[in-house]
Image (cartoon, rainbow, N blue to C red; front, side, top):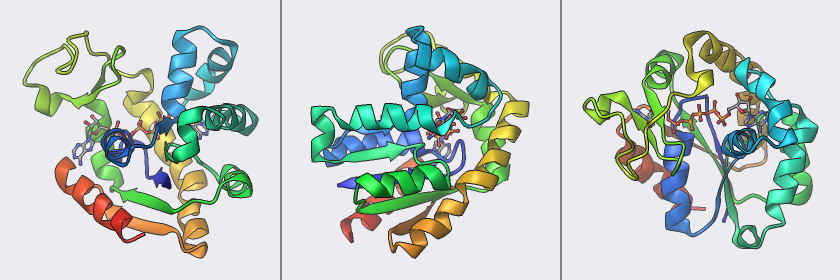
Length: 208
Ligand code: AP5
């Protein structure tokens, strides 16, 4: 299957994509994770993207289209993919439509009020990529999956989160209309338990 997850920052795209991609046996492709890995490895793509990410702005389209096209050349992407965080604006969506035929686009809908609370409590594992929340960590500071010390993402401070939300409303939200027009959009409420969100997404995908 060829799937895109849409939704505001903190909607739970990464949380759901990791589990659902494994269930569907397709690679989970997160442009945000790819950029962060590139920054950690001090590659030029990442170093050029960092100032945009730290400011909560979109990284230039040519950079994103370059890493996406390269990633899709890899063997595992031949059987399908689940994009998380891509496409992010109309240009990227139109480019993607030019070389891939999607099966479904799932919009994970979460109101802005929940986003700030979620992102201010998010903790990430730099080793295995697990995403957690302080509400469920019961005071633990190490990754429940691999034991590495958890970190807070630099762009999760409230000021940058507000900027990311504003970019989402201006540039990403219009993709809901774009994909509705193509007959691909499925909407799921992301403002429920993680397990229930997953159940609803799988139900939508079963009917594709
Ligand atoms: P990216 O990494 O894609 O960030 P994002 O889209 O802002 O999304 P997040 O990763 O913040 O949230 P998420 O929806 O994955 O939520 P999560 O599952 O972690 O992009 C970062 C930056 O990279 C961008 O700002 C931009 O600069 C650049 N970039 C990336 N792609 C780009 C592109 N295509 N074009 C241009 N620039 C690009 O969950 C969040 C928290 O909520 C966690 O703590 C989690 O435990 C918790 N949670 C999850 N689900 C639930 C639930 N149901 N109930 C309660 N809590 C929940």
